[in-house]
Image (tube, rainbow, N blue to C red):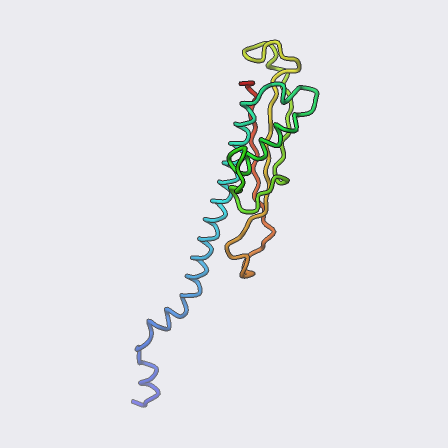
Length: 164
């Protein structure tokens, strides 16, 4: 048997060669999993923030959101702050890069609720506050140029003002 035939039949190092072929694929899968998990975590934080902001808005008085008028600017600023940081006096954002300008607060009135419950006697119906947030996604792999950095995360939540 020639040395060349012996070389072709030699299986020493086959596992190392297979590993060298699989490592790039495994790394791609691993880092893709990290990135997907981080995106879903960021999305969850934004959803949680707008829900808390709308719950806070729902506890404010009816005078802050008059039907047919504009919302009280102080109440809107407080809702934005609660959405961004979790408290009215907070300074650190829940989501990196979430600014007050990324949060919008609007209200509308539903006239179907003028004759019942806590809305009896109100003019224009029940005020409903909509809190929306849209911010850029800070990718884990974006700094290395491996992912598009123009992705955004957005969420919205509504709450009826209870006038508590």
